[in-house]
Length: 429
Image 1 (spheres, rainbow, N blue to C red):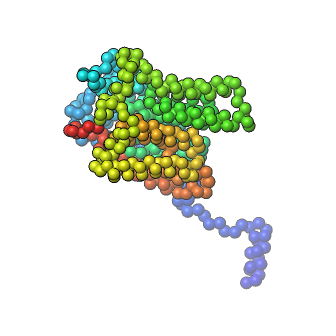
Image 2 (cartoon, rainbow, N blue to C red):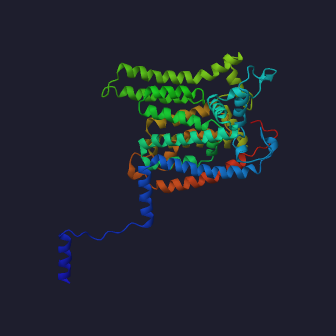
Image 3 (spheres, rainbow, N blue to C red):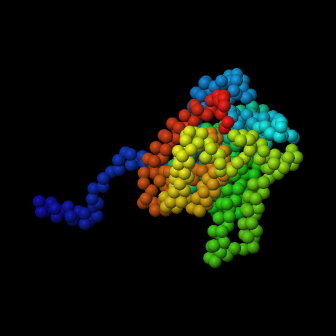
C-alpha cells in the first residue's frame, strides 16, 4: 500500500495531473453557445430576431382569421397576415402615403378631428419612395421596411449594450426585447423600428462622444418620432460628463462646437414638426390640437390622464393611485439601484428622462405597450446583468429564457386582444 502511494505521488511530481471532472452536456452546450455569441454577436442577434418575428407572424395570421373586415381600413375582404400589418395607426400612415397631409385641420365647432398631422413624416415618406421604386403595395413594402429597420435597431442595441455589460448579456437583452408583447409592431406599418434605429444610434454616439453624429441622428428624430425632448436630457448629461473630464482630457475648440451641435440638434428636433404643421395649416397649435383629438377630454393634459385612466381601469380611486405609485417607485428602484450600475449614465439617464416624459405627456392606454419598447435598457436589470460586479450576475441565461417565455405568451394575448378590431361603445379613451 505504501509503495503504491509513493508511486502515485512520484508520478504526480513528474507532471501527471489529477483527474479532472469532465463538463456535463449542459455545461458544454452553454460554453459553446457563449463562445458563438462572443464571436458572432450580430449574426446571432439577427438570427434570434428573425426567428421571433416568424413567431409573431404566425400569431398575426391566426388573429387575422378572427378579424371582422368591416373594421379594417383598406380591407380587401380577405384577412391575412398582410392585412394585419396595417391595422390601427398603420391605416393613418397609408393615408399619408396616398393622400399626404391636409392643408386645413378637419373638424367643426372649434373641435379638431383626428387627422394625419399626429403622425411624423419620415416613415411614410420612405415607404412612398420604396413603393414607387418596387411597385409593391403599402402593406408589403411598409411591413418589410419595418422588419428590416428592426433588424438594424437590434444590431445597434446589441453594440450599445455590449460596451457596458458584454456580448452575452447584450444578446440576452435583444432576445427578451424581440419576444416582448409589443414586438409585433417591429414588422407592422408603424414607425417604432425607424425611431429605434435613430434613437439607439444617437445614444451610442453620445456614449462614444461622437457629437456630430449624435446631433444628426437627434435632428432626424424630429421627423420620425417625438423623443427629442428626453433625448436632449441625455445629451445634457453626456456633455456634463465630458466637461467634468476636461482636466484629464482637455476639450479643444472643435469639440466644443461639436458638443454644442448636439444640443442644437435636439432643440430643433423637438419643435420642427409642430412648426411644419403650423406653416402648412396656418394654425399655430395644429399639432397639439390634433394630438388632443385622440385624448378623452379632447385636449392634451399633462400628468392627470394617468390617474384618470388607472381609476377607470381599476374602478377605485385609492387602488388606482396605489398601483400607480407602486409602479413608479418600482421603476425608480430598478433604474437607480446598484443592480443597474453597469448600464452607464447614458442608458440610465435615457430611462429616467423618457419615463418622466411618458408620465407627463402620455394619455396612458393601449398604445403604452408600444411606447415601452423604447425603454429597452431596463431589460439589462430584468435579466440580472446590470451589476458592475460580474460575480453578482447570476442565472442570466435562465432569466432570459423565463422572460422570453413570458414575453411570447403575453404577446399572444396582446395580439388577440389589441389587434382584433372591435367597436367599444361608450369608451371615452
